[in-house]
Length: 371
View 1 (cartoon, one colour):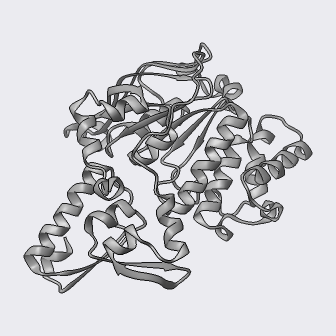
View 2 (tube, rainbow, N blue to C red; view 1 turned 180 degrees about the vertical axis):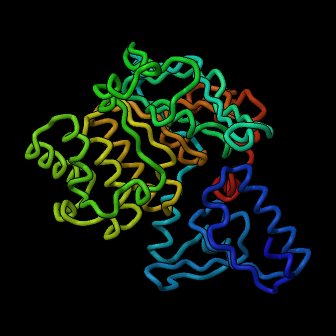
View 3 (cartoon, rainbow, N blue to C red; view 1 turned 60 degrees about the vertical axis):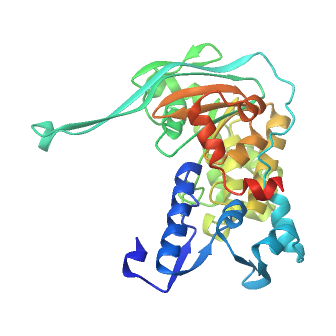
């Protein structure tokens, strides 16, 4: 770690942003211990107010390159004066789950016994050497109902994203069934899958990496329908409509991805995923890289679209605050296995697995929000 050099000042730039809550808690504890041992001043840059509440003595709030408010952590977090600070704090999702929505009993997607093992090593051309085996998913069984949002939560490396990629067939599972309205997608080849790809679409964590920087936004959104045989005029008209639905100006159609902010690019990602009118949307950490105000906008947009289009959503996240506000039911994963499932409110109120209890206990800033 940088403190091995015994510095007087440590600058930590979003060091816990992409981490799950337990790893995040470990890193924060380590920084505090090293700070106390070395007497180091820490400049901690973050968009996570829970982390701010747990680690900061003083807080400076920046907007468009200017410091708009500065004070003790207690004053800024509990009595913010600037409208921008007030808006940011109001956007922090609560750890208290929202009221449950009416549920459909109709299953859209059923995952039965899904297993995926990754193997690596074995020496040159697989001759000699030891082979490393990682069981990324083991006998995963889930059910997604019409119009609901099912959250999959867990630490980094728990298998969440592997399950997501197996569901959309970006990765081939080794065993199990992926039943879309009763049809098993797992054994299908590329040609057989083509008619079903429009029914399951994916939204990625990093929208910039998943968007072709050389392709205009309108063409990117229209590309899926065009590949499915939709006439060009119709596909482009749908792309313009979707840009409007996700809150982007019509001029976005002819612009390139680098011309947009992170939140805007995520809106483009939503539009692209919706272009084929899917039954299921798989969202893999879609807001983890966004600040709380933009995060709140994207989550609100997703919920509005889910309701409007009767979408069924698999929502993968390591942020339990987000899960509390978005998900109807939760599946908790650890080491590739599901350790607990249930309605979100019940899992938060009375977690059964010790691992789930540890995850909930590790969420930063609980004392601040509960005060």
